[in-house]
Amino acid sequence: MFEKVLKFPHARVIRIGLSFILFFLAINLSVYLFMPSYKQTLRASEFFLDLNICNFSDKDIDDVIDLIKTDKNNKIFLLGDSVSYGIGTAENDSISGYLRESKKMYSVYNLSVCGAKPLDYYLWINYLNKINPGEKNIYLVQYNYKWFPIKDDKLENYISQKKALYRFSEFLTQEFKDKLEFNPGWFDFFKYNIEKILPVVSNKDRLFALIFKERSKEDLIKHLMSGPVKQPTFEEKKKNFNCKIDYASSLWNKETDFNYKVYLKTLALIKEKNINAVVYLPAYNSDIIARCRDANFDINTTGFIKDAGSLNVKVFESTSQISQEYFLDDMHLNSEGNKIFSQILSQKIL
Image 1 (cartoon, rainbow, N blue to C red):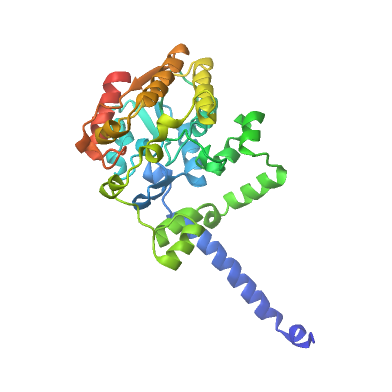
Image 2: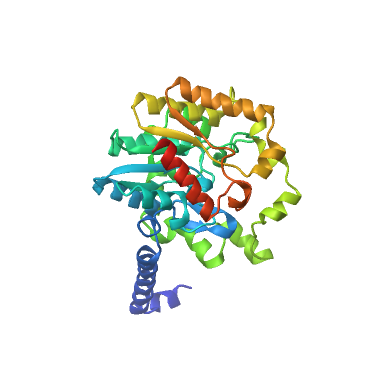
């Protein structure tokens, strides 16, 4: 039964094995060398604009850490979601791009990712203050009107990326771990680190975005079965715009919401560590404001401003400060809008 196997030339087995290893190494080396990362893009490099995707790869986080550790300048850290990232615009035309141009005495780090939550900010601030403390560093932290209502316990409702939980696990209290159901053991960290050092694995989402114009394996299946999923335009969204779903800030209860509690922990951290920070409430399209703003929305917004003020954390509110023509959609600014908003930030708080 096994005679053919036993007679199979050993040299051929070795050649096949070596060929596979060389191919694997070549693919990984190519991804590592030629996939752009934070040092080239100056913001999260895992992006595909048509689908509103902008996430950090592990290489991006490594880049940020390397840059900060060798950077002697005072720094501006921009922490937010796709609004602060500048989705739909080139990096030079984003808020951080304009700040980099106007505040040349600072190094500007755009650490924003799509769908970022308060826990993302909390972990980043803890880590950055640990590796690069300094009263002259400025943290610009975005308050988000939209991420509070949670109808389920999916992890992405609490943090944008699971990899951040591994990278900054030392700052996760037991309360966080229990809420997130994130209690990894040594094997989980071992598996994570093995995957992290393999460029093809750690950059798989960026590869899917580049090759298939999709984000994940699940999106790849959809792509193969029914074609790529396209992000609806703002005009299309407006036809079926539902304030209770798309602008649901009026629904959350700040007394019970987990994300709001994390915002308060972040504010307390800023005060405790004497961090030079400003929390800013970004501008929103006046068309949506007029349609969806209600008394409860104002109560929650003013409540947050009051809570921040009680901790002596500076808050900058700009909900209605930019005209409708400077928006790409309900909340994302176009290039000119980002320029105007960066000027407002510079004049008001920097």
